[in-house]
Image (cartoon, helix red, strand yellow):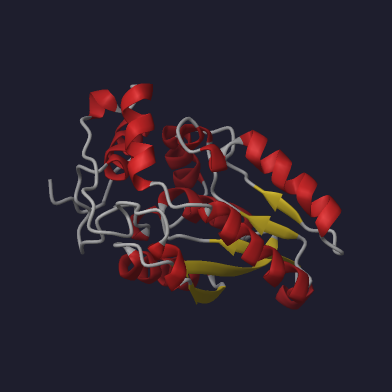
Length: 230
């Protein structure tokens, strides 16, 4: 199919494992314009670099949107000098521990803001889908990754948009292991995705995001080419 005649979609691409796989999965079906947000997070530079590389790999248009005001709200450890929690692999399924770490890294309204901006781009560009990397494992502690949130947001779009735009979360029922397996199957650029909260050249290897990434590759039986500091 001629690229100019393909249906259009907007992707919310952080450069992380989930959004990279979700975007790669739908890149065959849609002409995608990927959006990456710089909201003052520690890992902004690395996330932007990773997202740019992913878009070059998949042949996608890419735009970086700066939201400096978001970093000033809520005191998240991701956007301040607060201590980023470190977890052992055996704590990743401890709901109480992970609820506490989620509160420390929570950025107020982040996915609401990102998805709302993506809607503006979708309406302006005639895109029918907004692709997001929300998944089942993240939803356990982050409510803005859940199926309930997805359904509610789509209901808002039915009422509040003049265009027929829907949010699509192709990984919404998957855990990280399943996401890595899918990424390997579709030849998604897993090796250039970036997941670390700390923003170093190498993944720190001890923050919750790094731990989930490492465990996912191990459980999936897929070679992890990520460079970890620990």
